[in-house]
Image 1 (cartoon, rainbow, N blue to C red):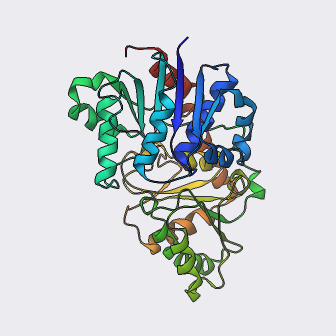
Image 2: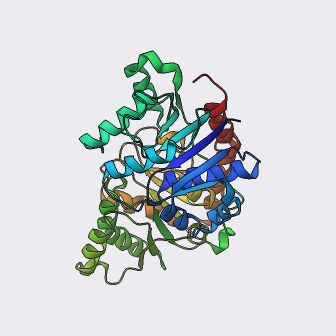
Image 3: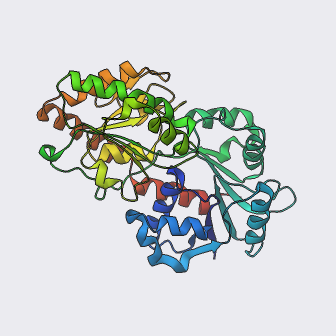
Length: 370
């Protein structure tokens, strides 16, 4: 019997890890037991601490754990090769975010590779080698960004029929829900990896201006949340601690295991990524919780945040422009805010279902030629 292994090769929890762990969980609930989840022990332990993903442990018999907690790329490659050598030729290996280069030059592994970024620009030389090796060697390539999908089909024209675009992301609307409009609070939230591509430092520097504009507009009790972890965490904390402009601002910076407990109360969500915000899972979750998004105007962002309920700023945004959008949203009466929330939630219901994602990946694994 054919089986597929979804291989996560990272030790951090970002959007891609959460998305595929949750997708796999939904697959298990539908009885797709021939699809296994493969990941480092340390990553598994982090995932089951997240309330929404804690039930992954209920399907432990379909999880393969391996020892990896960081190190050089070559060491990681060796661990991954050792792992896949234990499986027969009917196994499909689906690599996400990590790929052991050159494993398929002389072998006949059946490989699916997913590229989750919205650009190649953030990759260094080694990163590009790893990614393009995967593109060349994989039997099927899954790309998250529609523009990159089109570009790659032109570059790898001989295998363009085996390059496909992920059908967006998905969100569990029963889990990610909003409190009643009257219970909403003036919370402004950034949720995601604290990395340069997310423009998190630029956002942090804008907070004093945003806060002052809100005060000047008569808005009270605003609180800022920066929920996540990443390479810029120390930089951000040091910047705030040495800057007196933040002294009287309510700002919370931490990794939230249960972000729905903040998102269901918040009103504004920032998705300020470079290149594109499509299809950000955290953005979908925030919208589902009744947040009005402020997003950068780039890439395919409009596919996930239509202007009917979203507010746009330039990719190189100013603090003043962010502040103007925040004032406009928080000055809305409950009726207008409720109307935009309903538009947003209806949009998600129509376009980002988990069933569509399950059908798509099942087809990649079991529905076509090698």
